[in-house]
Image 1: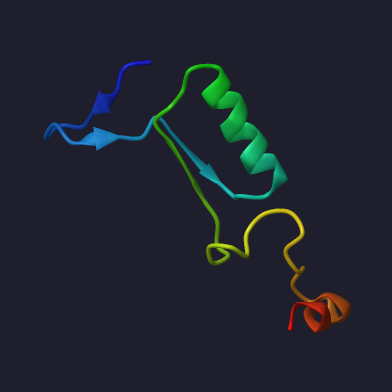
Image 2: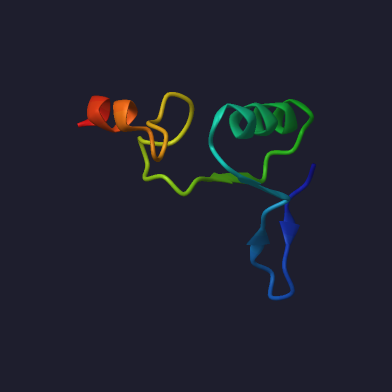
Length: 67
């Protein structure tokens, strides 16, 4: 798929994936496999703390493990 540009000629994303957990990463991989290369994955967690295996909020056992 060719790059898309905005009104002033700046590059734009074709897809924004909200959530870098297992489902978000799988969706991004499937999109790339289908030829969508102008995408970004965002997550509310800080870099390195996103994705599967991240401690769950409100779980006291998980919070104790992450410190």
